[in-house]
Structure formats: C-alpha cells, structure tokens
Image (cartoon, rainbow, N blue to C red):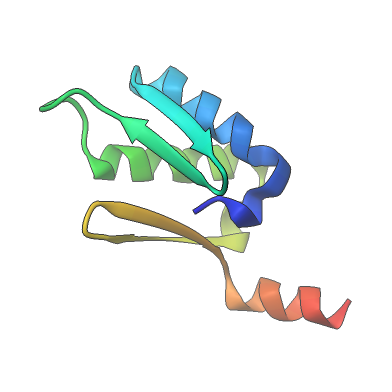
Amino acid sequence: MVAELKDKAKDLAEFLTQKLGAKAELLGDTIIVEQPAGKGSSSSVKTYIKRFLHLQGIRSQYKLTSLKGELRLRLRREEVEEQKEE
C-alpha cells in the first residue's frame, strides 16, 4: 500500500494511530490498522490517509482506492510518466 510513499510511510502509520486511536503498524510496504469491532470504519481510515497526504502537500500525486476492506495507495499515472522521463 505505501511503497510509493517511501520515507513518509512511518509518519503515516503514526498519524493514523494518533487520529484513529487504534494500532497502525508498518509491515514492509503495508500498514495494518487494528480497530476494535464497531469502532471506526475503512471510510474513516481512507479519510485520514487523504488528510495526511493533504498535510504533506502531495494529495494530488496519489490515488487511493478501496476493495473489500483493503485500501491501496498508488501514484497517479501522470506522476509515474513524469518519473520515467527523468
């Protein structure tokens, strides 16, 4: 999920832990969020990830998608094409 974020992944995990009041752990290129049953939802996690990206000034560079309770963060195509050109 967070492979594209590189050095900001740990900061994102800490941000989610603080905002959600749940354990968010970085494992490789994935952040696992353990929420108590009935508290919070994947939409609130998605909202806070978008908020973190906004605060970092990189929201427009990433696309966040949801599928079966799993959130995926990807660079937008324009950003990928620009990186290939460099």
